[in-house]
Image (cartoon, rainbow, N blue to C red; front, side, top):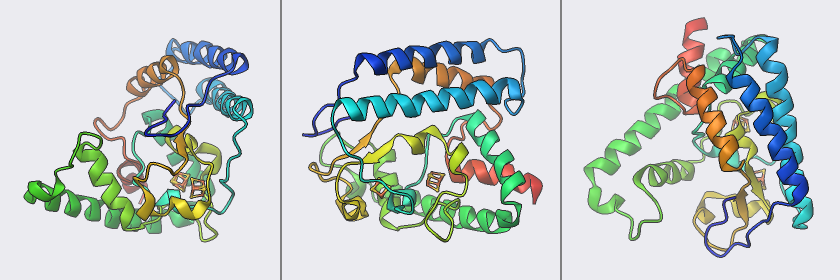
Length: 242
Ligand code: SF4
Ligand code: SF4
């Protein structure tokens, strides 16, 4: 569990460990599944169960540690992040969801993804051409983290956010979006506070065994090698259907 700087560590209760064990069992079943189609019910149904277990796992930890989450529907500053670490099968499921539920938004999503990608590439070039400026004073931020932190300062909403500040693919949002929580005033999620030690935002992630199994599944269903950014994956998929 991520708890950088001086944030209190969250402990995992026995109930959480038991739920985690059930997630491991489900993911192992998915890994040996003889199907190369992650959109088939044989994959989708157990994977949905796994996500429900993940919700229960997080809830068990929050309850055990008596932490109150301040995140609410429509609160969306965190959705200005450049979303990375999207699994291959999650991207395929998101694409399928967009085609079936919000096809009218595809041209606009492509346009926003293109602009955001250009912005990120421009920032990367600028940082590479000014290594003295982009050098961090310590090793806490590597160059990719720094690049993404700078991107966050530009407040570019995720292309999948709707006009009411809600995720338009909420039921199938990637795990990387599901792990982000805040226990403080939402105004403290604004970019200017991104590296402040006393801001209790957490990445309430899975434990290592589940992470490794998810990685194995990611490579099993890989369609776009080396591509795990939400915006760049959306472009790869949506350009096919444009
Ligand atoms: S992490 Fe912050 S911005 Fe995101 S939903 Fe929670 S309180 Fe709101
Ligand atoms: S996919 Fe949904 S939850 Fe994730 S950043 Fe985009 S709008 Fe927010």
